[in-house]
Structures are given as C-alpha cells and as structure tokens.
Length: 83
Image (cartoon, rainbow, N blue to C red; front, side, top):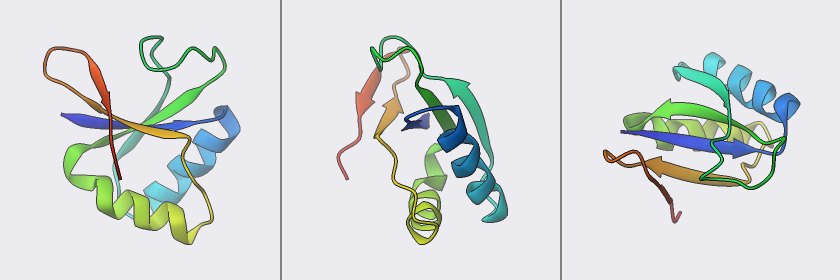
C-alpha cells in the first residue's frame, strides 16, 4: 500500500518531493489518477505507507500543505485519508 499526496500542480509537487527527499522519504512524482481528482493539472507525490507521518511532519516544517491525501487500496481503488 502507498499514499498519494495530491498537490495543486507540478511545481508544488516538485517542492514537496524535494522536501521529502531531504527528510529521507522515498517518493515519486506522478500525474494524479483521474479516479482521485477531476482536475487535469493535478500532480501527486507517491510515498510508502510507513512514511506518512515523517512526510507530513517534513511538509509542515517546510510550510507546504497537500490538497488531499489518498490511500491506495489493494484492489486498485483509492480512499481519502482522514487526518
């Protein structure tokens, strides 16, 4: 399982990915899947399930706030994470 941290656009996703990389969180930028967001320009940062708390702490310290966070289910669907 993994989380998608949804960002408004590519620039915000790149900034988030850089912050996460400096914090030791493995990540990957990808276009947000259509089943998650209707917005065509949205990008997400994919992180491992176990890295969520570290990632959120690092993003808060950097002043970045994700638009939404989704947990990928084993059946390929996504469920919005309630934080």
